[in-house]
Length: 289
Image (cartoon, rainbow, N blue to C red; front, top):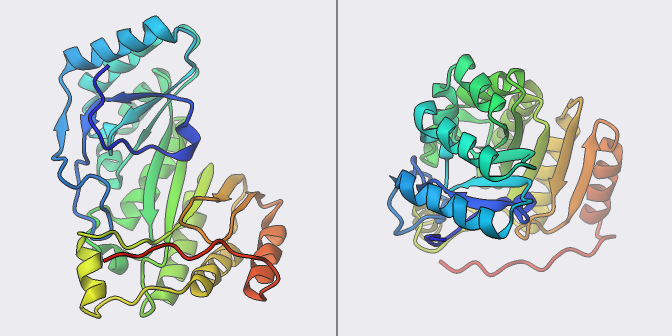
């Protein structure tokens, strides 16, 4: 099976069959992202995709979950994506879920009928990087997706029975726009009502445009305490009705998980204890520029 590195997947997809249908990211313009440096975007040859499916099915026929890589399989039109989903169903009789990353731009381009078609072919979960609910912050960091587009896309996907796992990047506004980042993110998430929500903390990756901004003094990173404060402030403002929340990525200084609205008060208490120095935090990570 031919996998072209680097491979990036959500933590929840650790046990899934990782099927590479595209290489890189179709919108690789974000100043903070170093995920696919030196890996230009391209669509993988359909014959290679079929060969990879057959190779894996011969060895792991009882596979139940598949994750489509790389950065955004939804860039493919349904005329290309649906045949892949059908192949997976034939190859894996016990298949229960197919998941993919989804950029806001490519999600918006899918019509309601196209989303329903994908859901009917077992695509049932998308991972979407909201990053921030502030359009100005997204513009400044080079992200091409619009906040309104992502809100609309997540809601339309939900109506098509495709769940969304939305990712927020703590610290993306830096010190200067932290309050704007918090308030915009609260508003966007409350309108999205995602099934899953995760917080990651901004880590400045060497070689990225953001790293140059930090070196030039144009962007000031948040301290671990300030990142925790952003997390607390966002959670305090959330009015989510049925959302599984996790903030346990390696970038986070405090591991959290719970379900909204049931565990909201518990999450806030845990963050208050951390801010008051009652809870040991993970050590600060190396930040090489």
